[in-house]
Image 1 (cartoon, rainbow over the protein chains, first blue to last red):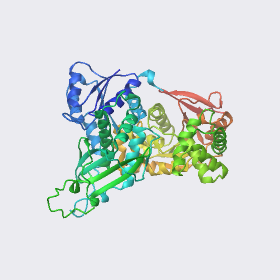
Image 2: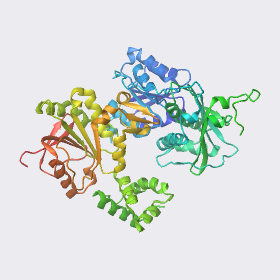
Image 3: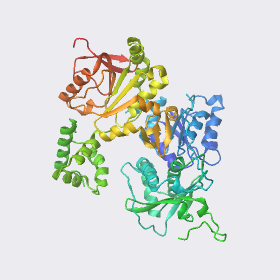
Image 4: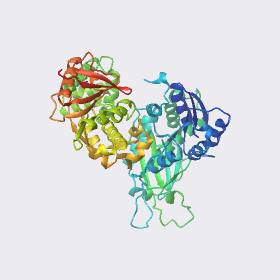
Length: 127
Length: 185
Length: 274
């Protein structure tokens, strides 16, 4: 399975990438929403995108809307991973087309639990 | 999957009867800031990492990271610690994902991300809607006025670390202006 | 400083006596990790030293905190979602067909921890079977007084709502309360929480139509497992349903249950005449 991790913090990209690789994912990274769309434009279509909200150039909410407006990317599951944690913000992200929402700070278990909910936990990773 | 109703939608807004500017002391206390920071530390730094509320001295080379919150209350959430503490924090945050050599950018990025995580959760406690800025890193910004600053002094692994939620009014005041709201330190 | 053998053995004996839970040798790390926060709160940085101070002068408050720290678990909401899916897809429709239109239904969450399981059940019922939800009472019990209080409060930290709670359910059923999240009052009214030690004679409760007893039996020795299953059975309706944890079974423990497959999960039902 493939995942795209989009976050402007390289520390956060490394942490999320490490968790997903540990679960058996093949991961690519991007530093903002625009770079994320560039990865998708190459034809490398991930099963999962973990995307931050507040980023320079293109934020996570704009990225979610852009992905949802392109039918070719309909199969992509989007999970926001962000410190934006107000009720209204989560509602906005879901309305824009995100499937799941992880609030920073999170543990590796939180990511794994959410992937289990989404049916995106590689079989061999079930503990 | 994205269909849901919003019957219980929470705008997070709290109305005040007067138009007086909101002071941070009306909105959150040090205990809340500490518990937000402790959750961030437990989840991201390590589940056995504790922030102890004890004042210590910050070294001269202290590094700060901060995020701005703009909304009914406007100000910054500032995290400050010594450079060696910032480096230890970055290593703890990255764990086995840390590169062999931590560059300055890695340390600044990690400290900035911690400010973002703490700031985002502080924002959620404040009345909304508010906007969270991108993290910045550097020497500590000017301290806010005590009347609109909630500061917690903590120890992490015995080293000093402070978190300050400070109103923009104090921090951004031009010293040449008439500082009628400034409380002398 | 690592935990001494004497300290570990004393903690093991204490936990077994108070909760009947068996701590296997090799679980020293668990004792250290769980007791360190309590020791630190008391100003002691060394777990062995903390245990020795309680051992030399035991007081009920400290011993209760030790037992609670070792017998409670961080819980996820839907990590193992199959027993919940089975409730709305199979179990509730069968019960609603079998009961009178005004009869109340009783569900027991027998080790409710901080409330994730009873509120998961409440949310599912309200979302999937809104007309039936008003007829259901969820009894939530736990060994730990602190956990019972937390269940009653219905408040969860950011880290807790991150653990396997689907985001659409979070926004539908919770509001922010400071830096925590609070479950909706309608769901809190469905859940009644109280203290209950499964390893001791049970209070008068029930009779229950459905019992969730997940990840509890794994902690007990065989005679205690048998005693618990017998007591639970006594509080269940004859056509009730029991859900155990994925790693647990009545097979080889108590032969008065019939195992039935419900969707991707297994349930246990009292055998008639057993």
